[in-house]
Length: 240
Image (cartoon, rainbow, N blue to C red; front, top):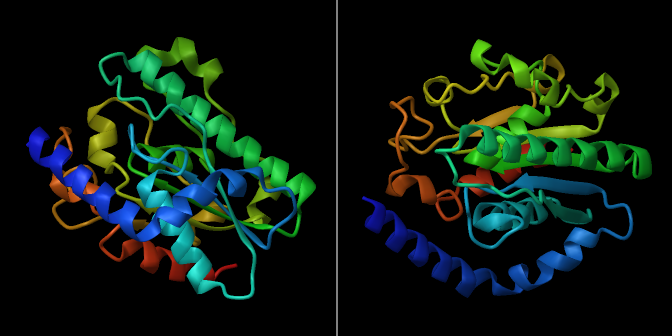
């Protein structure tokens, strides 16, 4: 199965490179965001996903959002976190996720201060969907065995940030069962954000469909090419 996923991932990368090569080249300048845009997509990529910092799914989603908002300026910010695959070292892995959450929250707060008119579309894929979800959490409750590390948990965003976040779009987010199986806190989006949050899960994707914890199957790498980034972009566009 690992070989299948690797081959499919390479195939997807080749397709995306062929049709969106110009987008990938333009990503670093989009990151700089020298002026206030109408909308900014803040996106966290999946585990060791190629094309950092946005990842393939993020690249596809950003371009889909732009296609749905003609006449509006849309900038992109790929969350610069490790997207680590060191699952065997749970504390170190948790730290990389926490770093991603803090970075995401800081970006939202910075935009609110410097560009109060900019609407944020928050997104993430796979591990990045957890980062995005935790960034707007209603409270992260660590399992009792990790209570000593509670002080390292990022606090919730200030309540007044809710007016800046227009939509939250999550792709292939680990299911509640998956999260519980690995002993992580549940992803509980705070009340002000729930009505503007959507999750996309390909039927049969074992990361998000409620299957027991395990490695991803081939379906998990298809979000950038199966049309769901356009669906998510339409969802976001209706809310900005």
